Amino acid sequence: MIDTTDLTVEQLADAWRNVHSTSPADEADPLVMDCARRLAADPGGEQAHVWVYGLVGMSGYLAWRPGRAAELAALDALRAAAKELGGRPCSHDDHPYEAEMDAMEDEVWLGDNGLLTGELAAGEGEPAPDAARVLCPGNVAGWARLVADVMAPLTVRRVPVGAPVYHQSCIQTLSGIVNDYPYCDPHEVLTDEAADLPSRPTRGVLAGYLVTMNATCWYAASERITDRSVLDAMIEGVRGALPLLRDDECAHDSGDHPDTGDADYLNQVGYFLRSPGGRAEIAEYYGWDDEDEEYAEGDAEEEALDAWVCPEFLRGLAEQTLSTLTEALESFETAQDDEPSEQTQSA
Image (cartoon, rainbow, N blue to C red; front, side, top):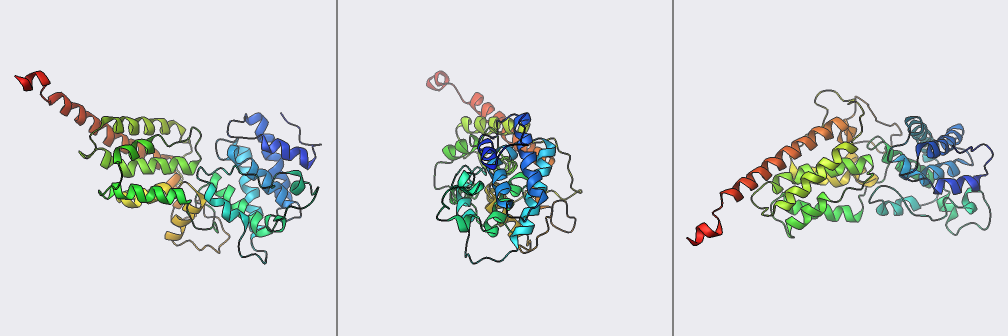
């Protein structure tokens, strides 16, 4: 276990850079807890940016399976910082975090533009050319919101709308398939989609993957697909995703889970769920007030947007997808067995 008591900020920054999704909890949790504690103690203070960027640097770990206490501490601290810093005036038309959002295709920011280095964390050396905008309270608040939204999808307001360009391209490609006018080889596309789940997905990426598999399973189960390997790949992918769902109890009332009857809408949601900017598009569709600083997790007066990432909902959706695909596979095998053999045909 790391003792953070006497470490300098620069030493802490070095330790933060070594925290990833595969980090053991006994090594990562003390660093997260220490960083969150310091941020929560003064979420609008002069050093708030240091602790926010510390949690940004550890977002790969926080997005996977941090210890429960560390997860709650980080969320509370990030939300407090977003609230304290987010309303302060600034002279900037935009902020660096907005430009970085397009690179968050897997939701975990892996860049390093000086946020975690000594010159910004410890105030040493010459300021970076863009330091004023990087250290702007609006930018720091933006990063706090992004990481909080990655950890607890669809519970954070005031995230800028805009899915990554790659995700928008995927939506267009799959839209052609689910609307039955593919302009590419659906066999190849659906097989690639089935293999597109990281080994340690964020909650949003995992939810988006399962929603996409459900949106496209009817097409894969149709006679339009003539290669059983597509069905095999999708079944394998969904079965592999199921154990990755959390064991959290469902917090929603009966009927709060989303309607999944529109395949094209599901196709869009499947990729919007995979990024903060995409989820902001879902929130905008449901009419969230982006100026409201409240956080809507479990708010009965709001649409249950976080139901899109509810493990119980996703588990049921995955089982429905598997049922459709396995029935199609059985029909495919039966049809092959019923085909006359080459020897019979020649006779």
